[in-house]
Image 1 (cartoon, rainbow, N blue to C red):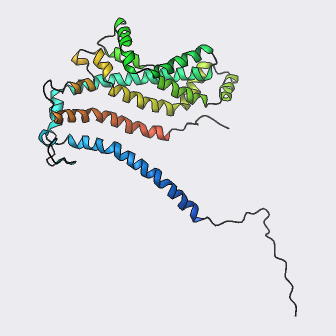
Image 2: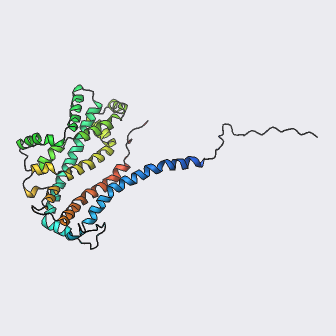
Image 3: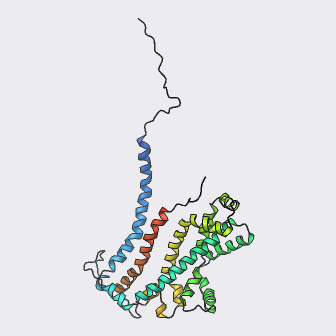
Length: 300
């Protein structure tokens, strides 16, 4: 008795892909590759975080426990006397107001001027603009201390010495902000601008209605950086201000240092107080930066 092989029935669905089993080795391999990078990030976070944690916890220690041996991370007798003494000995409310005025106005002007400058440098073909951009970048090659003396003379001759305006104006144009916006606007297709021009939009309308909205992530990022720079600025306000009623926070903290000795508990308390508004601003605006859509307004 003989048997014949029956032809195998073909799949009725043409072009149907045969499902393949996912290999578990790929997932495990990716996990193994991620372990070194994750470990490195945790090590770097610890290197940055432990000193800050020590700094904050030490502000709750009495002055006598700061240098007692053996050193301890957590305070054995927590106290807020350093904060109370720092707040009472320095006019922090006025310092915060002055610093907030400087930071808000300087940040708004910095973002606005940098956005306009970056757009012009990226979308207009002019040799003078290229030379201007090179000049802006050249300022980053010089130490800030080199420019303090000529900058001080210019601001003084303009009549802004011992005023908050003298602190704000030199911070309006920054090389970092111009570079950030220029690099971002270079990624925006020129066809988008040409289409707007064909539709009858003017240059100012194109900039305000198209370029400004899609550059929101860069604006928020630069705003956070600018606010941080102005809040932590120490040397320039120290040169420009001699009226205690116009001192910023960092100059006010310096006034807590005595001529003969330093009360470290008070100094640590004042330093932590000065950090709180900056941390709050960063946490609030970080969410908007992370959720911003860089490609908003662009279509294929």
